[in-house]
Image 1: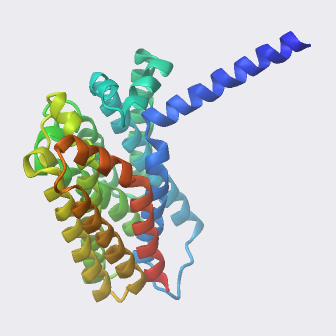
Image 2: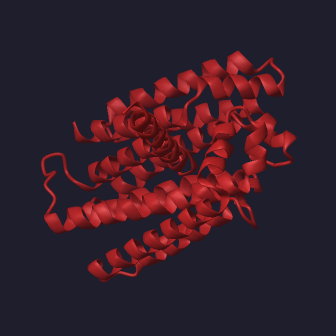
Length: 310
């Protein structure tokens, strides 16, 4: 009996380790929360405060589109982890990515990438067929391409500010906007303002996320926007963008969202003063320790969505 229990325990540990590794290479702990909040935000933009009801058909299409977006993001994450495997081994904040690839297996990780890419494209095409619109299939194709070339040639990741414009534009244009279109029919001016707000604070946290890798990217020979701008200046830019988003949220009378954005901008300013006189390595390490993309992005998305509904 004790032998059986020992083997059973080993099997459970191996299984849990595989699950952890799969989750890690797809960056699910980091991305699921704020992407779910993106979906809530899209519905909040599209529907009036007094009419939140969605027909079953719309809910199915929204769910399929969200699943397609997540699968497309997941394959991009796997591609990035595979390409930067050697670099991640040297970065103490990202060593778990390389460890996860080792656990899954390099070839198996490639297989996961292909499956996710294929499944995502299938769902994008299905939504296009259901809505009789090529928009969603086109979005899926462009999303998949941009996700892959983020890490592989022409490697958008190393194209300066274009990196952040593309990653931010992907979140707003390929995740939130398609869901807004499916969820309702808001005025163009209202939707454009709301999407502009999202773009600003999303650009902020994407920039700060890269700032937390600056020193280790430089050591690995990876050229990034935050290296050219500097860690402290990148943090200050993030603060300015987030504060501007707060002004936009105020224009929409989303006061809870505006407060959240000003609060986060203030936190960024505090971080700027905390690191500005440190070496680049110290700035990078402190930023990585004091900033968590998952928490900040989920907080901002959820606060903005709820304030649009109240």
